[in-house]
Image (cartoon, rainbow, N blue to C red; front, side):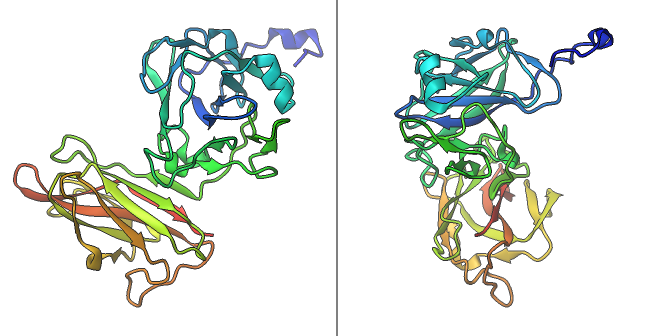
Length: 326
């Protein structure tokens, strides 16, 4: 903003933030060019001098972002393989910071985005791909954007598909791609991961994912728990209440549910050699007493309990996922 009086020239420049830049949108393939968007979601300006980007190789310094300069609070920048001027023209962008010619860390159908700060520390990561993460979005000519609760969480199942005229301000490019590069609007999530899981005998925490459809008419949601110890039994739980109960009796994990808890005990599974269990949820009969049929607008939270040997017999939990149904 141009100062209106000399007095404003005496005001201090905004403080620079170090960790509030997030990956907010991506499209791995498009007629106007693939792109990814980063946004300063913090309250202070961020100088991108020395910042860099890479794909699945995760090597700091691969693509230098210094030329993007300082991002003001709420400002987005776009990185694309296309020529920056042609990309801006295709999307009708004016005044948006665009770094074109990204062939060093360009995106593939199943890939990752790694954002590094000037200290070479990683500031944000997103692993994605509809083949690597079945049920997640395929961003071919239609971008995916991060809703609020999944910003910085590396949880691709929480990302939303762009639709022209949606709450995120998505539009169609001159070539027909759909997205909103260069402008991030905060949107609440229908699905997001929350809570913290403890490491199990694999040395890693187990994770839960929800995929498929969250439209009740489809009744086609899938729950998957991965990174489980091999050849151990487990099952899923649900509740409308979020909580955090550290190390409940007999467990080395954290229970992320509270209130009335439903247990899918008729769907106990063995994790096998891949360390994974998965079930299709019947949303017309969640396992409460009496059985509960989910209605539009309800939010339900899910986690998984499983047995482990660490080294003695014990149990543990995954993190949790929250889903709001249409």
